[in-house]
Image (cartoon, rainbow, N blue to C red; front, top):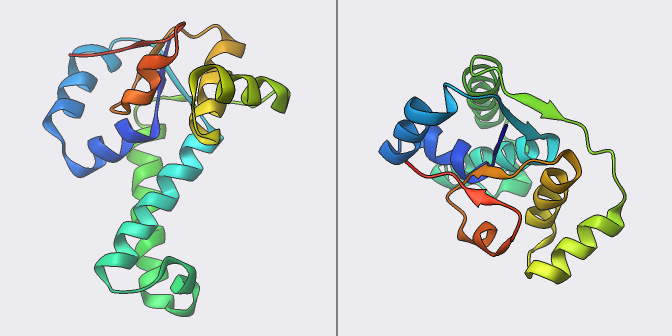
Length: 146
């Protein structure tokens, strides 16, 4: 099983050729998974990008219903085309925060990346599809490449 990180989703959604090749050559042929925090982070990044394009502060987005609806349409497209259509399993976070803190300290990771590493460790996942070099420091994870 391969864990799919936020950076992969963002690059795939933007049309990055390396992300498309990675999907075509590897991810489309193997079982893949991700987590709710990755979906949340991806959603936030997509919404922030659209808000910035419209010169709106992300924290003021709800005050602009037209742009908010546009954001939600993009987010729904992400969810349907990259999660449901690719049949990515979303893993529940069934472990203690102590494991996340351990990953932060051991591998010098920020909390969200540590949460991803902890998820992989908890479920015995050894491979990750990512464009985030921070995961190369995690000894038990191998970054999947084309």
